[in-house]
Amino acid sequence: MSNVTVCVRFRPLSQKERKANGDRVCFKRLDSESFVFKDEREDDVIFSFDKVFYEDAEQSDVYNFIAVPIVADAINGINGTVITYGQTGAGKTYSMEGPSILHCNKQKTGLLQRVVDELFQCLQSSESLDMWSVKLSMVEIYLEKVRDLLDLSKDNLQIKESKTQGIYISGATEISIMNNSDALERLSEGIANRAVGETQMNLASSRSHCLYIFSVQHGSTDERVTAGKIILVDLAGSEKVEKTGAEGRVLDEAKTINKSLSALGNVINALTTGKPNHVPYRDSKLTRILQDALGGNSRSALLCCCSPSASNAPESLSTLRFGTRTKLIKTAPKSIPA
Ligand code: ADP
Image: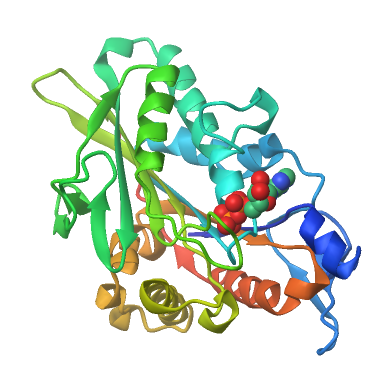
């Protein structure tokens, strides 16, 4: 039995936060796994996680701890999932994509590029490279519809389940990626298709959950078998609707996002409170797609992204509580095929 790995990342204070609130932060470091959380309106709380990445952490630190074991497992047939969670502007997309997917110095590249690099490195060192291939799908869940980011004409994909594939997104475009630069080109095309809206929290905040799905396959051209899948999930912002100043369509988006994140919270609650037969996976598209990741069959990691500023303490506290609950889930990884 293994837990979901839960980590926290505090990004550096932004210029805006420094200007508005000075250097006041909401935590005091204890060590690389715990910190004291400080919120003026509540008592101090000590939080502990598998790892805490403070503002000086490098992208490689996050990758090495969270994703290296997941990539190795995918090649050996265990599915893996990495989820970034947190309020808009907390650093989810930075952790996933880096400052830019295509034009970014190597030190700052995010989890996505590093996963791609490692996948190709592992496969190239394998003796039978011609037997391996990597396929990529990219979808977003926007207003409770699953849209194909690699083919925008497919804007309402259905989620299905089969004995061989487990839960999958039926009809989602799957492209073979041949090497790192090919993969990055395709990822950047998909990212450009994401639905983004403007809120007061962040001018380019994403209003959708974005899922990057890598299938590692092996076998001859006629008979391909999926070894393992890696799903990277960049969730939409977890902030409360009132704080975003949203109206109209943006308010609808925020409500849908809050609903699906609540559904995720409910699934986690059910999994941690000993009611595994009554887990409400079907309450949202997000939880249905993540069913294998959360309920077993997968090795999963959650990166809780937080602003360090005292002014965002309530939102950070809510993110940390979500992480603490997730830590209690136990999953049983699929055994490695012979
Ligand atoms: P989110 O995806 O959670 O809405 P972003 O990843 O877009 O947030 O981050 C908001 C801003 O903070 C961006 O300008 C991003 O470049 C910056 N940022 C986030 N995390 C870091 C970090 N660890 N180091 C430096 N800048 C960061």
